[in-house]
Length: 369
Image (cartoon, rainbow, N blue to C red; front, side, top):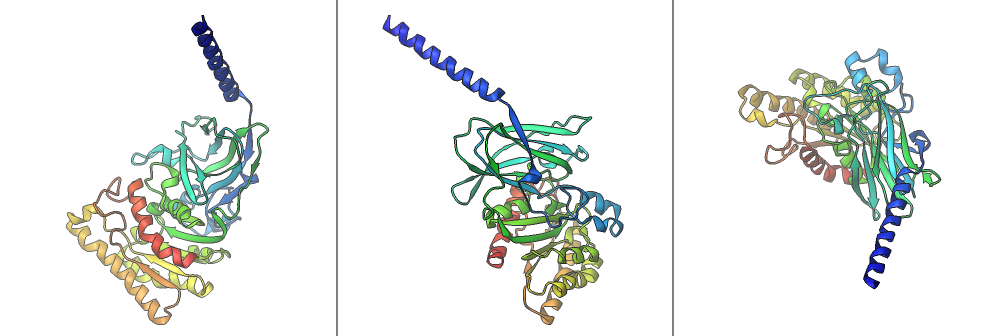
């Protein structure tokens, strides 16, 4: 009889727990506009949309392809702290696009990260962006049944699609704030300019773009101005970058989108625009990778090093004129040591982005302190 009674009590406890869990899952959510929290990794406020990456005034000055691709939200994230037991997201995509060589989770998905301890960011979950075809809306509860207490979070926005609006989903009645401003420091900012690789092609999820890895490693904001196919050292882009008043470092990585002639004729003036306008801000110039297939493609085996050589000649010329605050990173192991860091021979996997970040972080760390 005692055994039956204990079993009954156990079943009752389980039922009560299940009911409580079900009630929690079905409890009301509140949706907080990300604009009420802290938006990080954005270079300019005067953009056409909330989460696009170059100033609105450039629309008439740049190629239509550059303008369109700069509407992607790559690198932009929202920082917040909450005591909610559930954390989720709802957002409206700009295009709801798709590419053959990149996972939708990276292209138009969002990542939730949580801070463990004082400085370690951990990936919590990623949404599978099955957007409604009419509204282009995506929605996801990343995690439920969190332990009580305030915790610091970050949601990374899509890499190769744009975001019209984004809301953080939390339990109704819970507390949410913009978070500690010294976590992803508000007073340190790297401005990174480059190509589709820098933009995040082809990370499996948004938090694995190199600029986002570097941001977590260095605890600072990193503005992503990687623009697919359009990192061609347009002088108007250099002038606009120079206007980012709180930039503490410029990272320049354009070679994959440039011809040898462009590397030879544009590099000096592009870098000099930044140096003249912001002489106290360090500039790090990054060589282009030697793609794995170039080992076997005789034409590319010769051509890619020539582009890097033209880029380096301009660096050396600039150094002769003024050696202050100019640094150079070569291409050795930039995308990995075993030729396994790319999706398609050019664009990086998550592993490739970790290699890239591991190459750059030791150079950037002493410059951003």
